[in-house]
Image 1 (tube, one colour):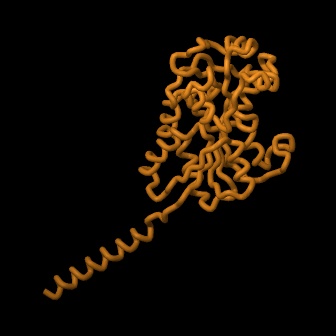
Image 2: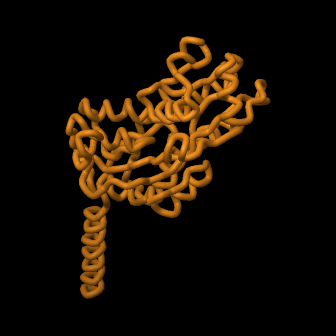
Image 3: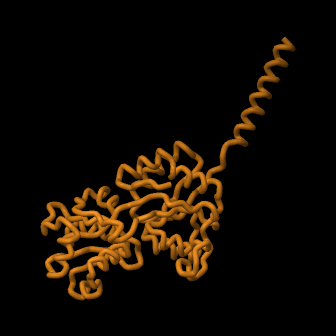
Length: 273
């Protein structure tokens, strides 16, 4: 009986020690703050649900807005672990490895060795349901802008989708200021605002990303070529102000993996990393 009791006590002690070790090994909860371009809202929210299975101790906190606004918030001291921009310009402005032309303020926020070109998007000409003005191409849009018969929604000049649109207008030798004075252009502070104007048919068409058109159920009648506006590259990086470097790096690695890539591809992104 004494031997049996001793054995039971030994087993209980072993179990207690094992339980204690497991508790110590259990990962501490982490809150990861991700600043991302507004055009990634739907995909990253879907990825957040998937990532719970991969890293249950990590809570993803998103801040979606125009890349220019996000860059300014980071510059002004906002907490951020991972930044994903809808264009290289805003990432370059935070990357000390870039020259003074790209980073004139010599800002240093990008953690060395973490920056990747994550995704490519397309700049799409989208129309409201039924396409009331029967616009079927960028060429037809240009003709409508010239004769004043078409109302276009585009992004502000400080956001990537607006900057891509400006390149398209320049490609067609159109003067944006003259068009604005003629009342044939309206603006949005980010791509979601432009998308909403098209969805609500307050404009005849809008220049947005192909992924936003997909998410909003809008018809895309034409897609800009690289010659018209360049490639639409989404860079991503861990910031050197992060308090959770390893968790941030792990999440960025996950975004480059097969599971996340499938989510991005489903709405029209082309994974690059």
